[in-house]
Image (cartoon, rainbow, N blue to C red; front, side, top):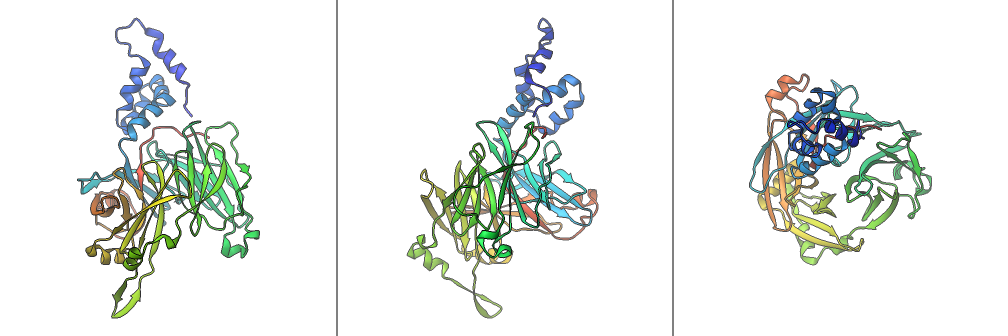
Length: 413
C-alpha cells in the first residue's frame, strides 16, 4: 500500500554515500518512527524524497510497532444536522491514572457513516446503507469501497487483519434476519470479502459451508487473524481472514452458573415504590491477553469474564461482585462493555455524552476483583463546542472503543 517501493527510497538515499551528512535509510526510518504521527504526516511536504519515505511500508510497519505500546481509547459521535461524524481519541488509563485528555482526530463530513465494531490496527470499518468504507483517523483518510447490492437485506461489515500475509480484509454479510425471513431457509444469506491493496478491486463471494445459515449478527472483534462475532444464543462465528472460512464456536451455557452465583443474581430492586425484577443482561466479545474472551454483567450485581481455552468449546469463567455503591449507578446509566484495555480491565461506559461534562469510564478487573473510574476531558467541553459549529449544549449518543492505535499507513484499494 506504499506510494513507493522501499528499494526506491533506499536507492535515493544511497546516491551520496560519501557525504558525511548521509543518514542510512534504516536509521532514517527508525528516527521517524519515534516521532508523533502528526509531525510525520506534516513532513511529507518537505520534499519528494521525504514524501516517499513517509509513505513507505518500512516506516508504516516501524511506526506501528511503537504505536502498539501506546494504546488509546476511541470515541465517536455524530451530528445529524450538519451531517458530520466526529472522532476523538485519548490515552488508555493506567492502573493509577484517573483522568486523560482527548483530542479531536478527524471529522467525517457529507455522509454520516456508522461505526459498528472496534478499530483494527488503528483502521475503522464504517457503513451506511449499501456503502462500506475504511477510515484511518491518523492520516484522516476515508477509503470508500465498491457498493454492495442489498436487495432489501440487512448488511454487516467487519474489518480483519491477517498478520501472516500482512493483509487487511473486509467481511461483508448480507441477509434477512430471523424476523424478516420468518424461517432460516429464506434469509438469502451471502458472504463477500474485499482485500485492501489487491489489484482486483471488487467483492469476492465466498461459500459458507459450516452448518446452517445464521439469522443474527452482533458485535465483532479481530484477534490473531480471525474475526469473531455473535450469531445467536450461546454461539459465536469465527471468520479466518487468511483462509476466508467461517466456523462456529459454542459459548458457555447459562446452566454453567454455580449455585452461589445464581443466588447473587436473583435480586429484586425497588423502583417508584414497586418491586421490579431487573432483567438486564449484556455480554460482549473481548481480547483477553491475545485470547478470545467475553464479558457480561447480570442484574447489575455480578460480572463474569469468559476466556476461551485451547480447545475452542472449552471456557474458563471468573466472576466478580459489583460494589454496592455502584449498583444504582449502573441501573441509572445502563452501561455497555466495549472491551478490555491494556491493563486487563474490562471497560464499562454509558452511550450518552452529556453536554459540558467530562466523560466517565468505569473499569472492572475480574481477576483482581476491583473496580475504579476515570475521567476523559476535552470531548464535551466548551472549547470544542466553540470551534466546531452545530454541537451546542445537547447530549449526544456516543460509541467508545478500547485498543485504538495510531497508524500512518496510507489507504489504497
